[in-house]
Image 1 (cartoon, rainbow, N blue to C red):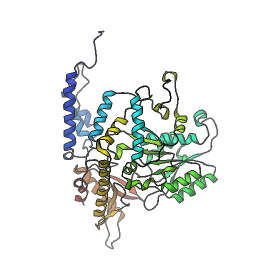
Image 2 (image 1 turned 180 degrees about the horizontal axis):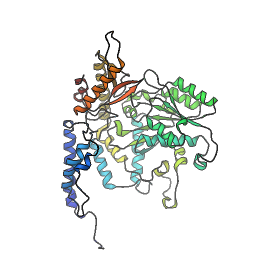
Image 3 (image 1 turned 90 degrees about the horizontal axis):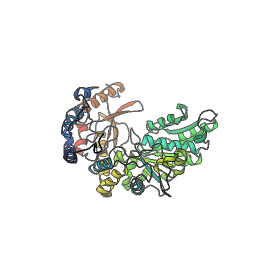
Image 4 (image 1 turned 30 degrees about the vertical axis):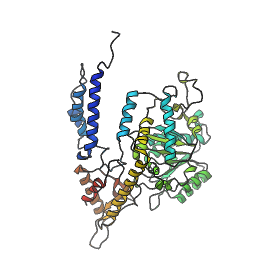
Length: 475
């Protein structure tokens, strides 16, 4: 053993490598549209390209960057591509990437205020500013976690505790409990059902509510379902309203759902993971009509606010329920820091990354005017695409265009002019395959009322009509 042995022994080597990496990133972002969006790798391909390793003596950064380019990059589907229209488009913006670099260099853990005061305090500050920018009510407590799936789980766990059955102390087993139930639209994200499973409510503990013709939750159907369950002895726990559903970006009737939730003493959770970012533009804030009734709200800046994955925000007006559900303080984590927020008390995680830094840089660097303009432009591009598609006899929109999402299918008619459903589905699948195999764009699919459709979601910060119009080229 020697006293002067350290891991990183050559700062200048790192400086050269870091400059080279930044040059690589800048070139990648500048020229990304020339790359095929979807990786063509077959399963197991990467192992055939990687050299044996690790070596006993290590490899230089220069050699590793070469291996990264040659071995790893062919297996990358470019989510940062301006023609990435599958799922929900995302953006690793320049400001966000710099935030990730600085966060990685600091390598702090914000589990307690004491472990890095600025990590906690910047999160408090930036989330309150973002809350105001999105037009959400004052007084909400905010916390950043990795994804909306986790934030929805945390919110529903708090909702379960708020029922008053002392789940924290007594648990779910070894005693008799009534059936709890969570309600959500048949268009809601699967993370809601997964949260119910993880919370011990089981498949019987969820009830999907029918959606209307525009694929938003039918509030009358919700009201009937709750009444039926009450009569059967079921205890309503929570209802999840979605503003920007996954398949069609439909907006659930938040005010009416909130009124039902309040009357029935249910927790109201609003899943605005996708659509919430659009409300940075006041013209999109009609989706918040009734949001003051919500107990919790989730918005993902990593979806449509140009912040690199991962960054999901949970706001709640009942932080005491989150704390009551999750706070557990062993002796080695007790502090005498006074009245401060220790974010470890409000969820499952102890270790917490400095995610607020990249979100702060994005908001500060681009400014509100530019962020609003880009999101307005994305919605305009989606409307232009929908208008072009509606003018075609061989295409049918399967849902109203909403926010940045357009869903359509190819239509094949028989000799009488009636739609041949089987042939239409085959044609639509063929069309999607041709689009994705071209490398020029990447779209995903969905099924609406048993009709197979191509789904285009516009949301990358670099997307222009030049990329969106590629959809039309294949028609």
